[in-house]
Length: 246
Image (cartoon, helix red, strand yellow):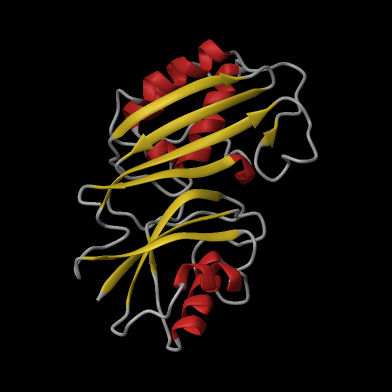
């Protein structure tokens, strides 16, 4: 029988979602907890990969298990897991349902703050420069993205994906209170490092370091920008993963 679990995590101390040798990952912690509580080796599949230091407010995994669950499984898992990972629910799905390939929409937020705050340094990028980026120009850069489907300029090098096509549903900058901007973006899929590169491009446009025409030419020609900037990971959150039948 196949099960989905909905969860969230603060990615600050993890080297990304995916299990890797000699580095702590979210996947490793979850597999260890499930295997311990269910008394057998459990392998899990996530809805996607997040990089080192990136957070998830909504995330789904799937795993297979044939026996009856022990009582209060969610509570017991949360007691076993570290404090920066939380399981919200576990539910049965059809045997062929896939956490990654069946997702039809993913949404991210990037949090940018202009006020240094020791209590948000892990969950927002403090912008240390004296001049704020122009919010109107930030939105113009975001609007431009919605005209395209191929995003090679915003994909990290050494990727093994077969296509650069992504269907964007939303790209929007919003002023949140006086000292914070939030970028919202959603699509059917994302390339490796795509959101952080898009935010960096937008900030360069907002500060006058890159022109909209340069961005347009890069998207038309599917070439790298002269000034690519992958912003720091701590401001990035995966906030939505949607499925057609869940």
